[in-house]
Image 1: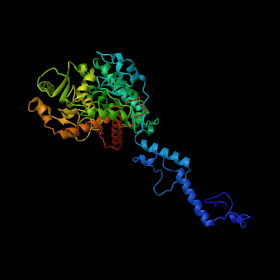
Image 2: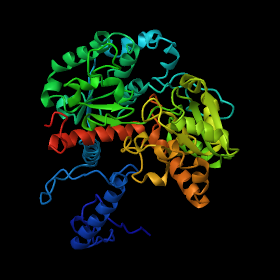
Image 3: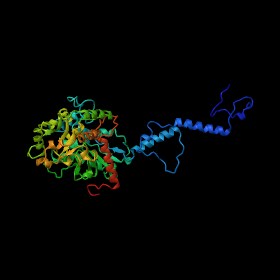
Image 4: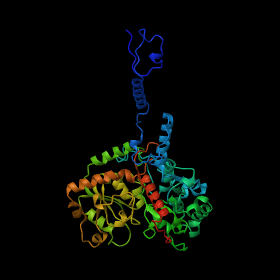
Length: 495
């Protein structure tokens, strides 16, 4: 017995067959045939066009419509639909985020690195240049640095790290007209640092050269430089010299009228010209290649045994004994619940990363008085260790890293006003001991959650799958530039 054919067939209808009445296949009516044909078409279509695991529902922030709401797009074949979908996702994902990067003459960046032995009078900086500015890999550090991603990173290597990270930025464009912002990959902090002890003409020479080079570019003239940004990985104070007196500190970089139109990523903002600077975290020793590295380290920080209620790592400051640091040394030295790593000078702490990190990993609270300026790298080392930072002035973090830190300072840190300490109105130990244990646990968890936002991922990695300090800084720049285009931000000249 022959089987009955179900669904569409490439044979002619049975009514047209000469032997139809002589026992051939019985064919359904034309109406049934059309229904069966339509059903089969949609079945095949559902198989051909089923959603991909990388399809648009995983990208809720992008807009996928390329047509007006009431205009129906023409039908597309499967290959066309997939290609157009991919193009739409890529375009929308980068809309408002494209960055154009200048190809600067090497005197503004690479030549500076080649002269690394002359960057600081008292030390050879060449060991800090490898691996895109992360420096050489660290050993275990007595257990302080397990796993991957730990490097002997100097705190002033931001320029090199940012330039390397920018090479892997997902939304680079070769068309400056398409760019939301323009990156200037000059090594401003390395140049400024190598000439801090020279005369002012030498200190300012390369910055003036850079401004003259930019002024000749059509990309600069398109927006008068207000869409340009650069990394200047020192505190703003190192670039704010006002006079030409050789005795004054720093360079004039951030006081040059052209640069004041730009946005500079610095380690500490200029409080009088905030529209020209954005504070970003100091580079730490940890540069994870992927989110898995971050999670492994966070687990270690959560499990750390913290024997000290509070601790301090740093050097004394010469001068009056009525300073926060002097009080910290006095109060910590008198307490059995305080751990201390006292350096003869700041560079001694920097050359002992394992000892400092082991102290912070074994402490509940880490004291963070002001350094040479309001901020210090130690704050970020403490957070990295899962240690709750204790500040003595709001400018040490709260007014600085607004793009990277939670809006509620009390959720992750403690503030004891410096005047209360220097006037000897408070005991640091008693103040910290009064914080309830459940509050301490919640604060520590918030600190540990902050870690990926405050570290710079390995700039060589193609596997970075988390938002790091670089990503957040770029978002802040793009937001700043967009506001300038809309006229929401008043420039330092009042425009």
